[in-house]
Length: 194
Image 1 (cartoon, rainbow, N blue to C red):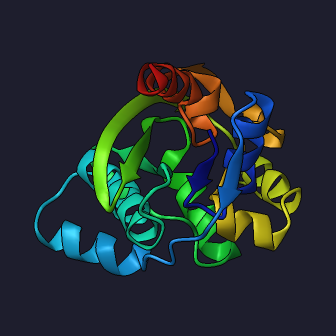
Image 2: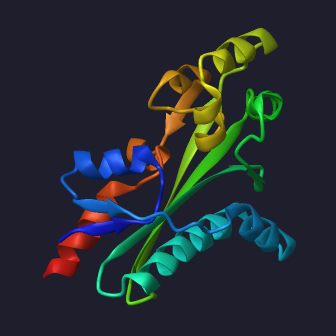
């Protein structure tokens, strides 16, 4: 069985590959910013936003490829119940890191599998992360290590790379933190096949 991954994330594709889950990538082109703005206006919390985005991506691609299983995924940062978006530029990235500095926040990763244009399974995982108390210089030095494209695409830290050094502790599944709770996906696929 070969999934369709409705995500442009190279990290998610790599996680699937590392776990011997075959997949084709077809990007959903869901306007995430528009969806987030609409859901925030309705009072949705970050968990609901993450779930909705994963489902929308999955269903959009599934409706064009009805006989295939389509995996949609989304990850968001929640700080005191408030959604923290990907940075718009380097100045915004520094501002986000200053807000997360010396604080506990949650990384919420949601996945959804759809078939024939309808959701058939979903899962959401939440991980707790606490950033160290870092100086402005330390935050700036860290940001200089990340190229702009990566920063704007994946957010202010990458725990699979230098971002690990920012944290006092991380409680949660590594793959979930990187954007894909693959253990749960594997469990579902095994169930689906039988």
